[in-house]
Length: 430
Image (cartoon, rainbow, N blue to C red; front, side, top):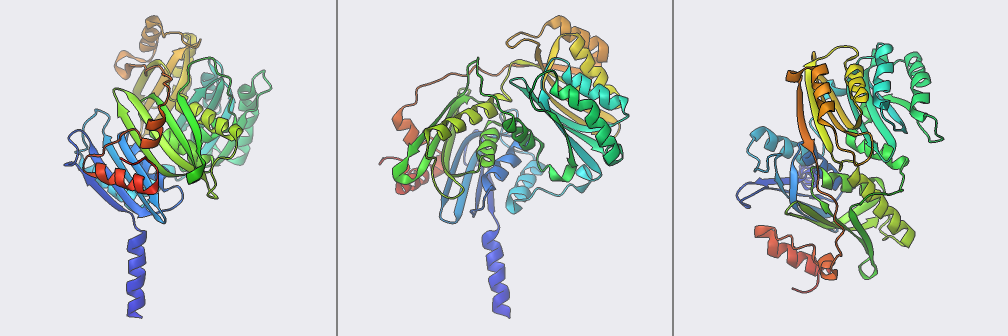
């Protein structure tokens, strides 16, 4: 019937997120506002789209009321400027307007992912790629993270290089390398590439499964408090700001099965303050001190994984079999530890980014080592940048700041935000 068709159209319109991108509201950032029906994981999907575009979230406001959910982000590009590229704006509108990223069938079709985990040590990455090169496996893409003595790595191979027999051979050779001489767990798991929805999120999950909370260095300030009268647990993060910080925090909370109902994010002078009002998926708040401690530690780990001092090496060169093995062997021979790696091939060109540190925690990378790498791979092929985030500063949180959302002040939405939070009981009367 005609009226039923119109009703279905109305339901579809209600379920489709409304995305507004405005460059006129704020003089220093682009406003991205998303209104939608509340769905599980909707916040992570929004933050993930912004993170994948290397956008920095300078301020944000998150709120849900019943079935409705609203996110407001103030974002800039990697140079700290407003968004002016129409292709980027269109991508955000398309992605957030459907909650699905534009399909990229060719990117993952015909690929298998090797999930590698194990005890990290100097030269391990080099040994892994040397084994794969020796077995004539062509690495199409790869991501690797090292943190607190553990390694997590995703290696994308073409299906013809990763049949059942070949995977068994790879596991038999890489398994002992990844486990090393310790009793720590480690190994190789092969899965279809389409099952790994997002590489960074999967690396967080692999690291979380083998987490180690032995801390010998300064950590980000993360507090978890109970607000029993409102049925929330309040998570507050204070640390040096950096790209993808919000994504790492929201990803961790989501994978720990917590829902974010309200939140504020603010950055100032290189420092970030994030506050989230969370509950379990069943609607209950955190009920024990031990669980609060676990949440705090897991968030600290997630933040630290991308926060390290070292050197960023970007290598662009024609791709060939054994390239990664040769490059990472050069790192090992010159006393460089690969803290993170991002490997990508497009056609016959390889674009590889390595974040390297000294072999000892806190040890500076020697210029002689960089010069040796340049000489080995080619001066014109290598771009060197210092990677030095600010040290964490533990700051005592003022009780009023914990309840007032850090004074986010979202320009034309400022008064609305305050009224809404006050109405919800999330801030004191203003």
